[in-house]
Each structure stands twice: as structure tokens, then as C-alpha cells.
Image (cartoon, rainbow, N blue to C red; front, top):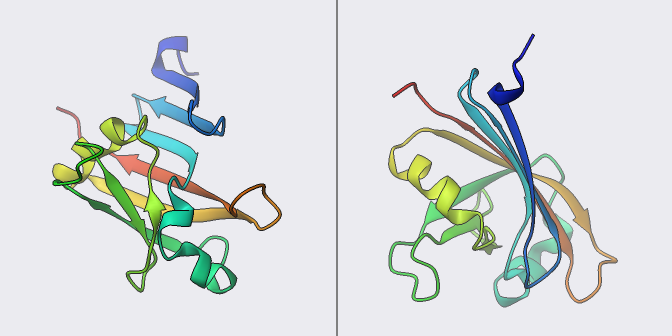
Length: 133
């Protein structure tokens, strides 16, 4: 049985969009599980390939060290290197160190809502496994 302190679940509301981010950290199994949306979707190539995207498709997370808007920016790409957008700015400080340490970070597309207001609402699921330090 897990102790209450072994698992921490956090729900964050990103101010700019009011879309939910769910972060679940399990320190005994050394992993972080995140559910979030793709930020800045309508500024990138996502709209041109929306009909080609499939749920459960693997996504690539790539650090952008020289991004002028976010020091921890993480871009979201398809397997064909088409940029969909970014991880939300409030989330990137949590994931960026794991990418830099080359920990096991996996990302997949979990939902596409084409009827969402303003731009298609694309959700991701990110799993991070990290070693004991």
C-alpha cells in the first residue's frame, strides 16, 4: 500500500487558456505522469496536418534553448518533425531537466477535439522515468 506522501497529484490551470494540466508524481516508482494541451498550436504547422494526426501517436519533445519567450521552452513535434506547438510554459520547468539529463521521456497524443473554440484542442500525455539520485 502506498503512503500518502509517495504519490502527489497536482492540477494546474494555465492562466492564458484555462485548460487543465494534470501532474501526477510517484516518487516510489520514480516517474512523473503529465496530461496537458499543446500551447501555441495555431501559430505552427498543426492546423495544416490536423486531419493526419491520430490518437495514441507518439510525439517528440525537443528543447529550444534559445527561445526568447521561455528559457525552458519545449517544442512538440510529430514523428515526421512537423511542429504542433509547445508544452505550456507553466509545465516546461518540470520536464526540461529530464530532457537535458536524457531521462526516459515519452509523449503521445491522446485527444484531438476539432470542435474546440478557436483552434483544435490537442491533448498530450507525457511519461517521465527518472533514476534515483
